[in-house]
Image (cartoon, rainbow, N blue to C red):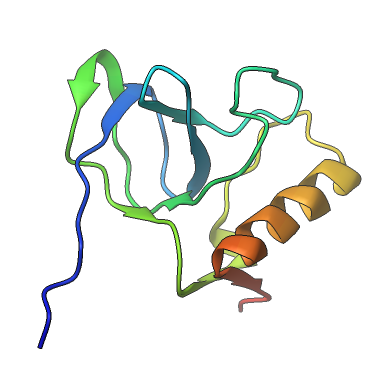
Length: 104
């Protein structure tokens, strides 16, 4: 059996569980921000555990970027996100193979 491919990521800024993220041009991971123009406006996966990188870069974040199903109620969205932006982010995740399903 082949070993799954893993990637170390440098995390920047504070994140809570199940936030969407984007790798920016700097190679760092930041929280999804639909109003940004630095790459973070595109959802690129889901952070599965808290990972506070506000004081220093971290390489131990647990991220899902493909072939997964996540529960919608566990996702933490930015406060000012609109329904249309949320649906767009869910579609971006689906294109990666991260499916968002209604949970209990």
